[in-house]
Length: 150
Image (cartoon, rainbow, N blue to C red; front, top):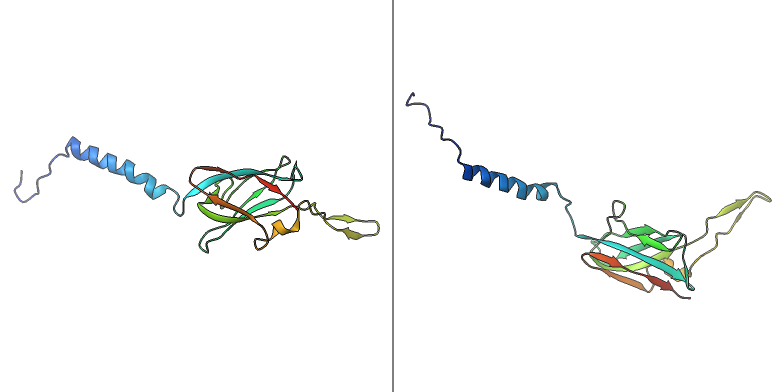
């Protein structure tokens, strides 16, 4: 062996174990979702004792830095919120809840005039300034059921 060449030592098992452990520990941090914590949010909306079958439920973030979350009502009045991707839920925090539920507008071709869409719920629930529905999303799974009144 030439004395001018540096000596190379074999890597010990301990070093390999430490490197493997670090790579497994850091991988989820590097590849995971960044941003605020999300929680699953589901529930049911009823009006006059019956499910609201069509419409949109929106959780409007009270804090200026939060994101809104929305969900579509199914034929049984159930919804599941999403913020960015289907079913991802809502960020933790406080919300005003709005519900927009109208029958679709249909064109009557005799005499070709639009038929006004019928509201399925009281108008006050459509606007965050007039809706009295509130929700606080916490870590884990959340269920918020809303019985709308006139």
